[in-house]
Length: 509
Ligand code: SF4
Ligand code: SF4
Image 1: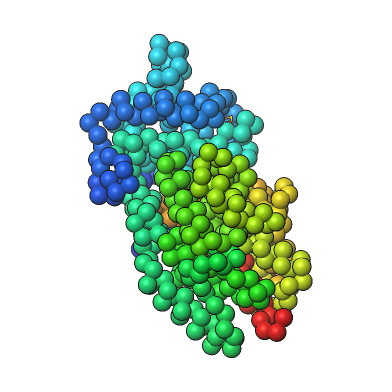
Image 2: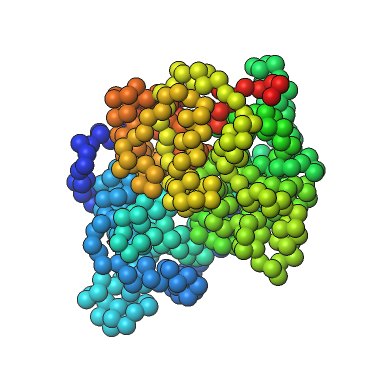
């Protein structure tokens, strides 16, 4: 930490001066054999890794047509090259999205195209050597799969999907990432990323009930494992203990209380996050999602609501239907998916984001607020990348941008937008998404936060902004860590439901 410093702000717009090799050897810790084997991957780099990696690549190219298109379609126009926060912050040319893709594309050409097989030097084709594999491990873990680059690509090439494929290949040969794979193991074993067992979770929730009672004089419940509750809340486990996450959990509980909605958490499935997406592994993605289905079936709930977590909402919104049967398009041959479909109340969106829930309730006049309670804040909103570019809300295009902002404006008087070049679908990643929220990548995280910090500084200087709201557990954790390095107070970041919690009127209504 001592030798990590924030890079100087740029004069915008500027294309970074190249620093070749700046981030070489700065990749993440490698997963141990214990971590790897716990989730079914080879413990160490296998002897025949080369052949297995090429076979896996062929398998993925056959399975995911998009990956093959992405390998073939790039015309190297360069439109994406300066759009990645990690390239902007690190200045390493291999962190340009097109260069990151080319790490895989060059190998693809060598083994899967005729020109590459016959004249590799003519088409930029490379053998998959141990050096290339190390380069993959290094640079494919310097991508947060945020998809900002794809917004600017005329062909819509999605570097995130290339990164996921590379990580999947690396795992299949025993060369995984410690952080993500360790966390996936904890979810399978205990039910959440933190490895927080049920009794500890129950204690935490009871403590929260006492805290809220002390602060408001009202008995707001934080129920767990309540059979027959209307709503199952699936939220990131950071909400149970981390700051400022916990303040949003209090906000959700107050919304449920004020609207008279019966709800519950599940001790068996106490995690919204799904790191299976980060490592690009369908089996892990599904296995984690199925815990939620099991909890919903066992508790007999009618609705499933997802808390403030960016990638979790993307997984829920985009993939839960085919993974677990929550939402339209469930597999009719899957009896448990069909049981769940029968059980859920289809008058409501399945799944529903907590912001959709709260905004619906505001629309129905079921909530009232004392907006002045947030007057000490001049608020801006950071769009989290997976919500902005991988999901929607409210059943209409752009709802994921409007609804959180609408809630903020309903509960607070002072709202300021950041530069439109850095919000909505053009938002910058916080720098900690996609499985890089680990201290072994802190240097990358600090540098990757640069574009967001620059724009936050602008609105702070021009409008006195002192609070940046977001709806992602990773954004909250990343910003609280890196903002002090940029000279901001870590308390400047918080959740939308933290603001709701401050202003909501509890009691008779
Ligand atoms: S981090 Fe985001 S912008 Fe950068 S290459 Fe990955 S998906 Fe593209
Ligand atoms: S914008 Fe698209 S086509 Fe152009 S270099 Fe980037 S990935 Fe290739």
